[in-house]
Amino acid sequence: MAEKIVPEKSYLVQKFAKIRFGAFHVVGYSVAGEETVVQIPELNVCFDIGRAPFFALTSDLVCITHAHMDHIAGLGYYLSQRCFQGMKTGTAFLPRELERPVDNLLKCWRDVERQGTPYNLIPMMHDQLFEVRRDFGIRAVATHHGGASLAYVLISIREKLKPEYLGKTGPELAKMKLDGVEIQYRIEVPVVAFLGDTTAGPVFDHPDVQNAQVLITECTFFDADHKTKAKAGKHLHVDQLIEQLPKLKNEFIVLTHVSRRTGIRRARGILRKKLGDDAMKRILFLMDFEGSRDAGDMEETVPMPAGE
Ligand SMILES: [Zn+2]
Ligand SMILES: [Zn+2]
Image (cartoon, rainbow, N blue to C red; front, side, top):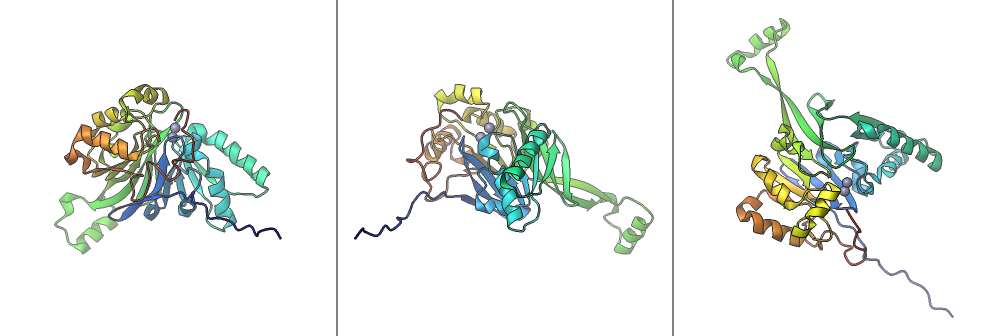
């Protein structure tokens, strides 16, 4: 009698990072050329969608930075699964130049899948603020990656009492409000900025990018002889990142999109050597989690990419 075939366990398990910053978390996976998806669960937002890992389905809003496959591949799956599972229609922010081709793509998927998947596309342009709620908005900022590409900043919108009215009592303020006096002013507090893929440029001079509590930026290349690669692919090289640092006031900077050619451990070592321990205190690598191998868990099983 033939021996019974029993399935073996596969160890090709993709691991995701989770970093806590006070009231919110940064969850995700990012390796250059392979997949980038970064979620802020508490703010209901996912930056890029990668291959649509399961956790990403729970965000109602997806901010697509640009159209490279490692950032946008899972969009159709994300929208379709949400429909299939009876969740609210998914909403994708994207550079306005991509609205038409992505709309065409999603319409094709409807025909291919024979499911009338609903979706909302919100075209964005540089410096545009989309107010999701009265107290929460998403601002797009142009990045520099060749073609249409945007960074997104999550903005907490607050109203504060004008200083000249600070001494007034509650009833006095209520009366002034009734009389039509503007007693409050608006402030915008950038909470998280996500740059997607970009080389150095004006995006790093934008006040929301410089002041966000947490800045998530790519830094693809670290080796000295990868500078031409960085230039060709319009990615950030570590030396360019270091040039930006003095003007960045962020409490934390999270680095993503590190090339597998370098790997997280080596990348961290190179940066530490250049910056010193003190400057490293506010800088984290997204994929530098316990138990991770160099930039992910499938190290030996995937071929080296020809280019990022
Ligand atoms: Zn990429
Ligand atoms: Zn790209």
